[in-house]
Length: 249
Image (cartoon, rainbow, N blue to C red; front, side):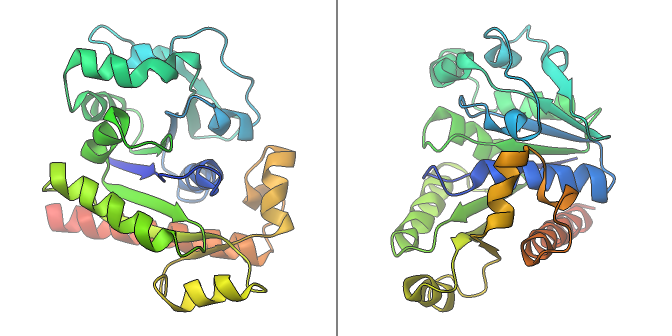
């Protein structure tokens, strides 16, 4: 079992799009039964897969001692890919987790769900609070999309410091340069500067169509450079997870 968390302290950097894409590749191309777990109250992950918004406010109950997370899961239209959708109840999740007082409740819930899903992809809200603490404790790999901005040079060390301060055995962090436009000099400077060697996801019309079509890029634009870059990113993730599994054995 492997938990892949897609996390950023800043919204609007393609976090949900990336989480949905990685979950789809895990299920459809790698053949892993995969759960896409949306912790962001905006509920964008299920929406991008064509699901209707969840009715009611029950998603946060998955963390309760007597919660039944399996009953909250919805199958997507893609074989092997299911979704645990977010709803309004997620807005109060930090208070719920603080009240429960169990710092690894998310990790234990993920371990329970792993009986059915060897891959769990988490779409995290852009916050540093009790939710992120729980995610850092549960994740086997943390994917951090960051925009091509000098501010990103500050954001990544902040995330690393926050994790190291509370999680000595922290998950590996994979930064991703998102929304990259090679026509912009600032973007090129970032790409060849502090972000040199990071996977790059471009800003282009094909990726923008994901929200318009409410479908993963590989289902309608498989021949594009953007899809090739996303596939290389997923191949790298699979390689890292395989290396971790071999080391654990």
